[in-house]
Image 1 (cartoon, rainbow, N blue to C red):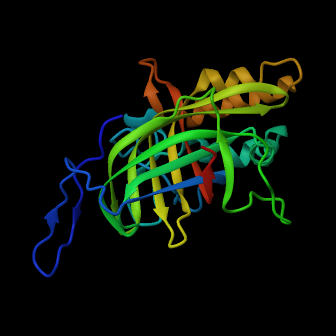
Image 2: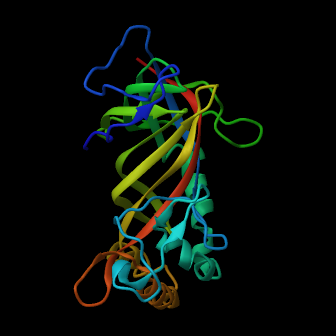
Length: 279
């Protein structure tokens, strides 16, 4: 993973001074760990969507970039936002695929998908020139509250089958960090075990005063991988045809040179609760 590009913070009353990302001051720094307790698809509302410009292009309908899939605007007014999957969601939710988000939520509460973020060397959650973010997985059955959601402040084991990914020298500006990001999300959909890999993506997280983190991450998912889910014997064959038709319209990353794209951009919104590791 490459370091987050140089970010500027205001210092005193003078001109903003650059943060030195080459030095990580660990004096007085704390480590915070959170586990994701919700994971849902980022949705499009009236041309607005959470997300990132993943392909460094602002695509227009039937244009040359992004396989002619129009880009969006995020809630802060940034343009070029990629979320092809958000475009096909309304049609997909009319099929049995509408259950996917509920299945992801169940894998979290069952302890099968406990994605963790370790924020190391965090001096100040509102602004820090250099922290390290480690993305990993916890294992075991989590404790749930009366609302059926993960309890805050519980202690979990590390998943020995997963190699954590460390993103170094990430800047926190106004309580928010952003960095390059790739992740594989193993989920069971329609009784099919799938590794759902987001490629060439980004993550953004806002650190709340209580130490929890919420935000978004996004990337590209191979069209072939998504279609493979619908080719299993226990999935309605009609779903394959519906998804293939939708992806031919909304796939917007990695042009194949033949007028189509090999990936579709997808955005996830997440929230978390604080946790601790068993030593």
